[in-house]
Length: 198
Image 1 (cartoon, one colour):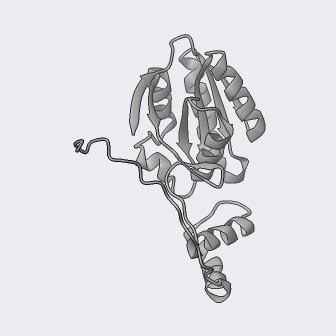
Image 2 (cartoon, rainbow, N blue to C red):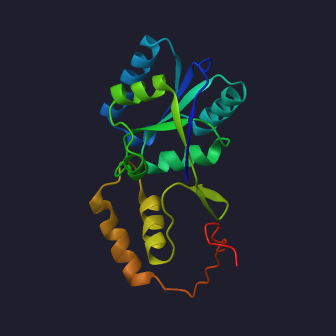
């Protein structure tokens, strides 16, 4: 479900969270370009790489009514980390620098520094529902079983940018070693409010 809103006009601070694991010079340049564009529009910008520090400042600035946007520079993992470390309602967007950027693609987010700047300056927000599994929020999808084992192995071996071929060895290793344990999945089926009363 989506709810549209507007960031207060007095919120003029932007935090940029740059994921150092992306490791690409182009990514850093895009973040710097975005910071410059935002400053040219009169906003106060701070770029940080430590997720704990980013979350602490974002939550504090949001409580004070000063935060216009938290910008995650990275991919879906960065988006998930920021969502899990920040308070509900913190205005967040992404400058895509990951592998697939499924969250940004699904939400049709701008893909350039200029586009992200325009979005932030406009101050329009969309409030989204999120899921929770094992105490963590997820924004787009969750996996279990064999697929989750492959992802776990990819993450354990990761040292930089993940590419499609990065999955080959983890898939092969999982095919050889995964034991397919019995799983039980419980879910609540909420009543359909649109159904007519009997």
